[in-house]
Image (cartoon, rainbow, N blue to C red; front, side, top):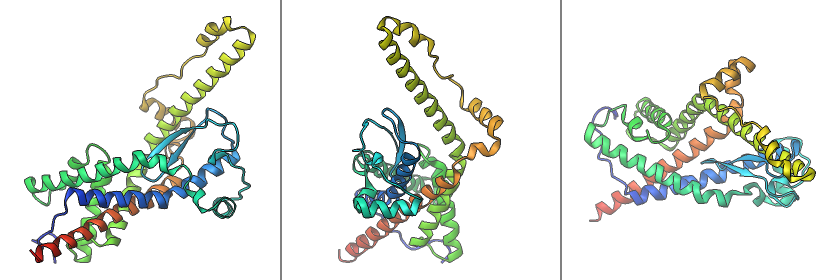
Amino acid sequence: MDPEAGGPQIIKVTPLQQMLASCTGAVLTSLMVTPLDVVKIRLQAQNNPFSKGKCFVYSNGLMDHVCVCEEESNKAWYKKPGCFRGTLDAFLKITRNEGIKSLWSGLPPTLVMAVPATVIYFTCYDQLTDLLRSKLGENGSYIPIVAGIVARSMYWYNYEVLKKWLCEKSGLYEPTFMISFTSGALSGSFAAVATLPFDVVKTQKQTQLWMYESHKIQILSLDCWGGCGAVGTSTRAVSMPLHMSTWAIMKNIVAKNGFPGLFSGLIPRLIKIAPACAIMISTYEFGKVFFQKQNARKQQYQ
């Protein structure tokens, strides 16, 4: 059936059902993606050991969290010793020596914030989309942008366009699991490439701030050894990082590393974001279809 023509009546899902579907997708995404980031952090710590006060980024597939290394000992999961020769070797050794649960180290605390935020986001997006389509018509290509403008509008626009195009090519009115999975992976990849330069700038700003704070702490410590009366003078001697605009930092990166410098780390970013987006959106859509079928059965028996 042509999707552009009238289709079968769509059974609505309730906001609570949307919340359950998005919660399932969020937890499943975290379980699938977190081991990749745990291994990445362990490999980073092996090459450049985390000192006390150093920051690192922990991603559970839903949200990035900036963590601060607070312990000097090797008790923390990210400081456990390991002689890894690569990603696969790290997976195998962590599983064998520390237990398979170690691949999800640090996950529970991050879910407290990431899961509710994801549930609220997906549910609000769907509710807004349904409302706008009931008022403005089914075929408004601008509806995903309007509905997702609070957050990832580029991702949602590409996802809806790709999903509609794949449905048309397949002669389907409703997307299958694979259509949702493919649309989510591609739209997530497009958004990752488009926003990477801004992420590079953000990382550089965070690095400059960390270097400033570390240098200031070292100066304070040395001055206290020599006599705390000199603390004020030395602290003023340390200058804050320049408050450069995003555009100015981008120009500096291009001048130093060329245009590709704005896209450094693209492959690891795609490896992480594409499957995360695909798993999250396809699980969410699958959950909605499940609840639609349940609701349709209930209507038949009423």
